[in-house]
Amino acid sequence: GQQVMQIPQYQHVQEGEDFTTYCNSSTTLSNIQWYKQRPGGHPVFLIQLVKSGEVKKQKRLTFQFGEAKKNSSLHITATQTTDVGTYFCAGLNTNAGKSTFGDGTTLTVKP
Amino acid sequence: ETGVTQTPRHLVMGMTNKKSLKCEQHLGHNAMYWYKQSAKKPLELMFVYNFKEQTENNSVPSRFSPECPNSSHLFLHLHTLQPEDSALYLCASSQDSWGLYTFGSGTRLTVV
Image 1 (tube, rainbow over the protein chains, first blue to last red):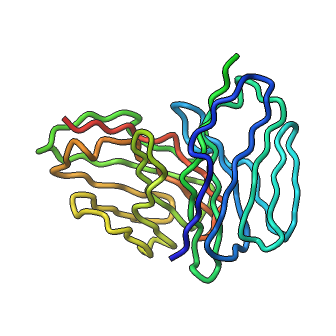
Image 2 (image 1 turned 90 degrees about the vertical axis):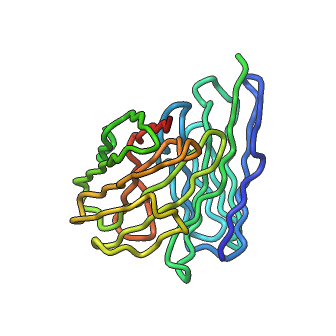
């Protein structure tokens, strides 16, 4: 079945440092979504990428979808304490008819 | 308020109890989901409903019994649970079975 892997599992950074999480799928994806879950909260939709090689930005967050549509990354520039939480990717495989979540990357930021 | 409402927010139950979790959405979505999230573990998909029909049961023990009476409501009936079932249970909905997901705030379940 479809597998979506995320690395790293945990990342600890000093405030102001950059952060990147990577998402890799065993199959070609139709789209990929990213979610953020704050500590004690629930996952909240951030963005969806659909096109091969697509890059989208939200303030300090940059999202990329690979050319082969099998991988994606989320990069945060100059992290802030408000960035703490777990970031999940979810890849849609239309052949499988469903999206599969990665295991998430938990980010902690030291002030 | 996310548009997906889960009740109760917290639940403590004994292993012999029967309880139900409720999820409600008025976003006009056609797909609804139950996820289990344990401490330091990823999101585990439990059940998927599309247009009130169950389309996926991810090898969930029978002590968890879902019910979807209509496209707006989803229940998870619990009976004779084990302490390892203690977790955050998240309900989500999406327009169709392909995402984008809107999650509820979850029910924090503790089995004693």
